Image 1 (cartoon, rainbow, N blue to C red):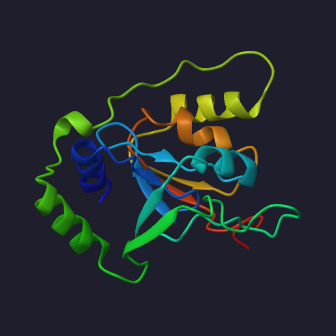
Image 2: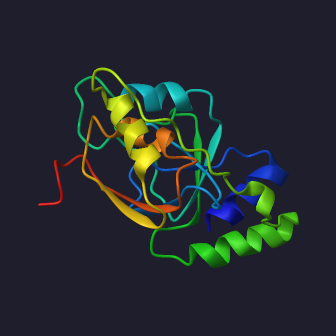
Image 3: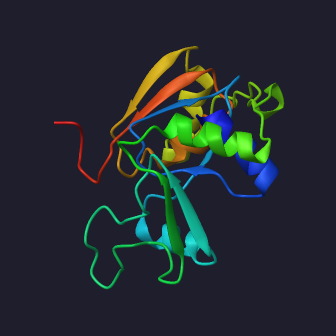
Length: 178
């Protein structure tokens, strides 16, 4: 599905991205790469401030995961049109395939992320360096379960060009899977 979305974005000019809390995403070398909406409200609001419309495919509107005082629950601007092409329970693959056919969008290997492992970091341990170390050492076809609400944020960017892996994240603002 990610490849279809990236192909649609390439021909339409739409910005294609993942929601911050997808349950499972195939990532890394040899796979199409997606940006991800920031998880925290302030960065997400800033990122979405100029959006006029958002088309959802198997996703929910960009919502804060907690009720933050003085912050909106919906992170998109009030004037932003939310279009639900396919709901969470709908056939997202069929919806994306139909849209790709209509636009003449075809996935191809040029959309695949190249292998680009970072060097192992040195010095003091930081969240960014943890993400870099994981990206450098991640074996091919790993399954990464990210339970980190805060220190895990650098992982997404650091592992873009890592070995192919499945990324499983928290789907809410909870602490852990317990």
